[in-house]
Length: 414
Image 1 (cartoon, helix red, strand yellow):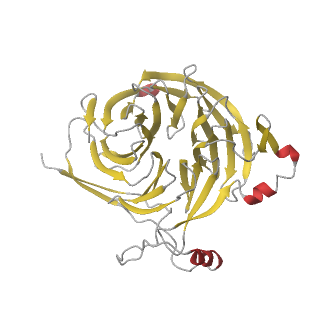
Image 2: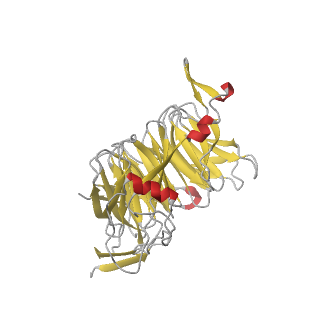
Image 3: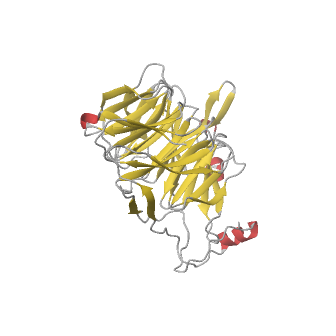
């Protein structure tokens, strides 16, 4: 069978990237000096706005098969610590590590575009919006980065949450302090432990922490709007969809939060999705229509719930042993759910009727637990691209076909 040439075009997204000129001149990799960055703020240049290129993928050696054949397209090394989180941003992939570094990879050639964030605390989560990157750290801070106007591959630290302005506006008033542990108080706008997860929705950033709280921040002015005592144990995962925010916790529960009214800035508890007793829920994802919620736990189980039309109640619709060890990460793309595990494998699941899922394959190749997963929604030759980060310090890129006429396949790729 002749190899098929697979080609797709990424959607143009106004995010992160480079001022692209019609000429194919090489991109500058030098960092701006501190003085030039100061000039950048005071005298912004009048060059063309940042925009992304259309991205075309051409993979020459991926034959179409009658069964699921997972192809390892790349192994990206460069992190000094375990890869802890990923984000997809148009033509860019952002990966961050426990070694405090953040790497931007450029597609389609998957080259290292730039690296930033050294020495700012182990990175636990990251999200992007506009030309900003928000990173959550073990030191209980959220850092805000922005693409430099003068050099497309330089990211400047522009703020830290809570901001100095927010802090100064509250620290004098005793009622703004909350007890975090015995004989120790903090402002309610501050996390008191590692920030483990972030989610962004409708102009708001949500942060979940090992301090058991969920905090809400406004993107426009970086102000902390709300702090919720959400769980009885650490919060491990967050996802937002259709006006509902889901928080997954080590207390074995997923809680659904929603605004009390259209004009309200405060959130209230809408429902609780019960996992297995005394088993940590490590990751949660939700379908595009908001109807189905899937989660993975430390016992290796994958569970799914169906929500009602008004998102006020949920019922368990599927429950199965997905991995031999804990499920650490999940992502959902179209009709597929992917699960990454401490057993170093990635499970591929196809959604069926009534929210049930069917296992269609297993990907092996990582030499450590799979800590994070992301999938591109773009169609690539009848499949999709899956990105996985691991405690083995590597980021891997896989091609996963969407159609199969056979059952489960176990593929080991080194």
